[in-house]
Figure: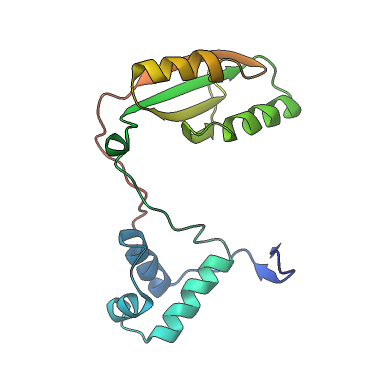
Amino acid sequence: MIKKTEKKEQIPVSFSLDKIDLQILRHLQENARATVKEIAAKVHLSTTPVHERIKRMEQTGVIRQYATLLDYAKVKKGLMVICYVSLKEHSKNAGLKFIKSINQLNEVIECYNISGEFDFMLKVVEENMDSYYDFHVNRLSQIENMGNIQSVFVMGVIKQTHQLVW
């Protein structure tokens, strides 16, 4: 399978990750700001092959982006809510309209298409209950084709990670 990039290059989408690639990924997940030199020392290679491996994993989409993880409470977004959403209509067009609307809501930091009683699961962060109420009543529930919304309030985070382990 070939993926076209903006530069009109063709890059293979799938390739095998070897033991060194997995070690590099583990180190990048622990600290995305680590330098190629630091990672190279940890995986016992010189900087050039490590740099080439990282670039290959970026170009093929194995590494999608680098991110900064925030403490939500310290940026006044300490209320986390899981919203289960069902749509009234289940056509492809209706689903795409919903997804477009959700992508415009900054309060929604994750959205999953799920199976079961509901169609989508949203992870929403807000400052407090009043701001969530305003978001729920005036923005989320106003989305076209919105069916049922069930809100579950997160009482505490037990485990939260973005790191895959091999």
